[in-house]
Length: 332
Image (cartoon, rainbow, N blue to C red; front, side):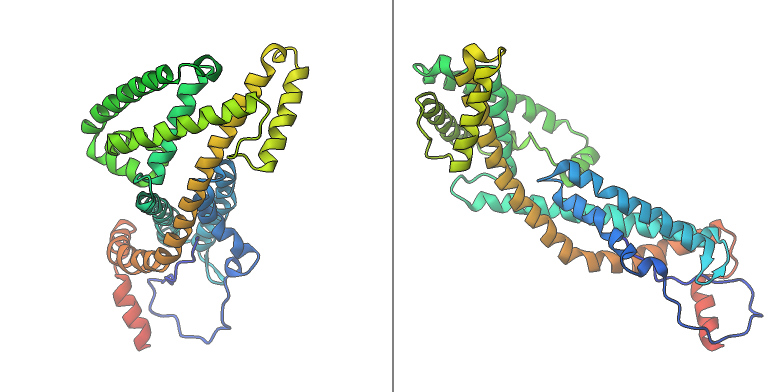
């Protein structure tokens, strides 16, 4: 959420007299312009379920971000008074209170929701479940399920071998990861393949095995013209439309049923991941709602007032610290 910094610009002259001014209302605080301030947070929260929309929603916020900084640099309320310190202060405020910390709060909330998913029957976080399904899809995309209908044990053995190799590689990479990169990835990254290595192997294999069995059951039903119990009526209709489409396509004509079945299974698996993403998105919104006021207070009262202002006063050669000037104005 992009905020307007509460700090008032000051002048180094003590000769000006105090005047009664009409109460000033910042035009950037008025709706609908104000609504642009919230789009980046919506984008961060929605990026799990709608990545492209999540990215697009950052653009209005960034435009607002730039307009606000320029406005505070150029004007002291209604007076034209360019001030580099005021503009720099506002930029730092916006960067921390509107971009970095709220985004970190959203993603942390998504991760907490993911961890809460481990309380379910699988015992695995939502993120780990996503990574397993991603791995199954990647593994299956290089093999046609029809070739393994009568030898599912061979498919499962190859899968376990491939998964074990992947886990060993991830464990090695995780051990040598730079601490700063580890923290950065944990807070900001949305993909965590290392969760396959950090979760209990028995639970990972059990979840994978259940999903592989379901995948073969769906494939068998589709090949036999039977609606799988896992499919909704909508999914079943989509499969039949896709089958008819592939049947008319020269590139798919000889294998239209197999290809339609495999594509439909991938869509079903993607749907499973979407459910997990929705739960994480809810977690992101909850975390943002809880954290936004503490973030504003921390940035305003601690970072800006105690760290940024003193440093900028030195940098811009202001001989009178803000605190002393505020006290002077109160006495006038």
